[in-house]
Length: 118
Image 1 (cartoon, rainbow, N blue to C red):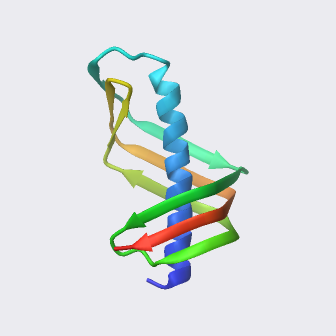
Image 2 (image 1 turned 60 degrees about the horizontal axis):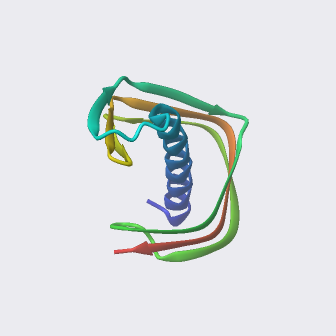
């Protein structure tokens, strides 16, 4: 995979992480009881949005090592589907089923982002 494609995938993954963080906050609703909750599926579409990611350090296997001072990507159309995810907020664990995130005309700006490959 070319470096530009990896960075674009990273930008899309960061957009997905932001979307999931927003979804988990909405789902959590401030409940802090100790329990395990199984929730349904999520079908989320981001359209005509601008996402700004600032001051993030990312590391993982297969990633390139690079510093991004400022770069903007335009995501015209993309879809990511996962089999599920587990989110823990406080002492409550939420298990979400299949998650599909669609992106249409989304601008992602990365600023002061550090990527470290392992």
